[in-house]
Image (cartoon, rainbow, N blue to C red; front, side, top):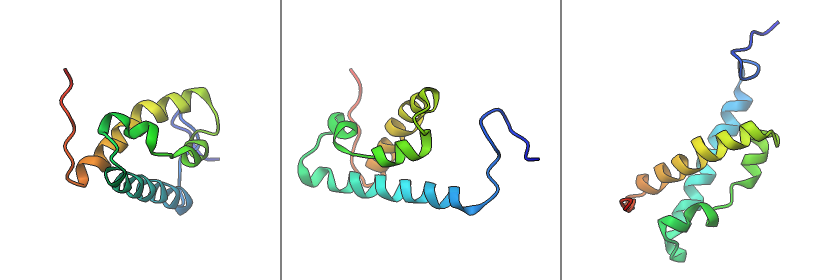
Length: 92
């Protein structure tokens, strides 16, 4: 029996790592294309489509969807944006 830490079964194999790696590569590639299409940082999350990954990681669960949007989508896109050398505008 696998022990749970309260957030599902503990991951002990490589498929999850492959899924995560694919997500990070897709996010970076999508953000890399964004400035070429003259996308502003403010519009980035609405222009980058990671819906496939959202469905894979959340399974449609409302709490996981909230976590995805709050703790991955915004911060993940910001990280990809800055890793490409683009500046994040300061908030007013």
